Amino acid sequence: MADNKDSIKNVIGMALSVCLVSAIIVAGSAVSLKPMRLANKEQDRNKNILIAAGLFQPGVTKEAQIGELFREFELRLVDLDANRLLTLDESSALGIDLSKYDQRRASKDPDLSMALATKEDIASIGRRAQYSVAYLLKKDKQIDKIVLPIHGYGLWSVLYGFVALENDFNTVIGITFYEHGETAGLGGEVENPRWKNLWIGKEIFDADGQVALTVVKGAVNPASKTLVHEVDGLSGASLTSRGVQNLIAFWLGEQGFGPLLKNIKG
Image 1 (cartoon, one colour):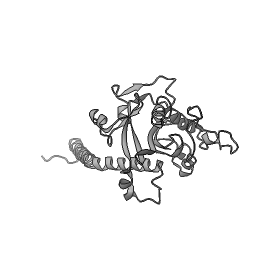
Image 2: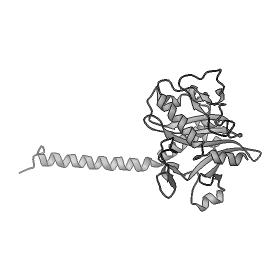
Image 3: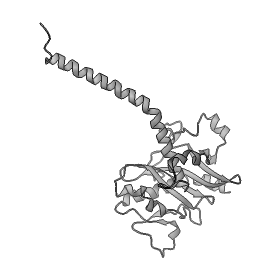
Image 4: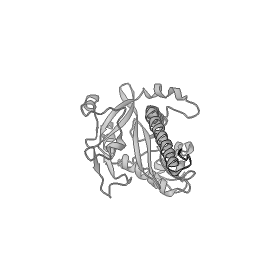
């Protein structure tokens, strides 16, 4: 007697076969597309570094120019414990490929990072990797601009971005955030070019070398005596604004790049 095609056995068998074939196709696609996905991720990172440094203008600069423009940077590994830029030979001795170093992954490795005490963890990141990558633009063999990676918790998520400084290692050239989960139209306005432009020319440190930059609630008072250290807050997103202020205070402070900037400034 022939099998009933509509029997439970045949239906289950067919369903399992379809699931198996689908799983194989999805897995194969994921593997085959991985190089493209990683290349796009690297391209986006490089573009954001260029934007922070003022070398890429969205809508003006062509995407095809990203590789050429990015090659102007000198990548250097930063030892955040020793507060210095490592030589390329020292980076190689550590087995670190600067173009592929994943600071986010390193921060989860107890051998490559340190746990932060609650008092010092103002950016709410939990752990800080020992090594980071700095992106240098040089002129006459001297550092003309420096771009540094930053991250910290906002309202709903960790914000990842870059801040670029002039060769006084104090004046902001630009800031950009390329990954976050903040609310669109509120905290998500960290991506708004108009808000990011407000950072240009602001100074991170006060006369005593302490991080003084503040993201104020509302708009900055043009008559403020500390105008050079103040940026407008994001409308309706006070906690995201505070998070941005805190991550700047951390990464440009004593636990972050602050001591390095003082050392290379001399």
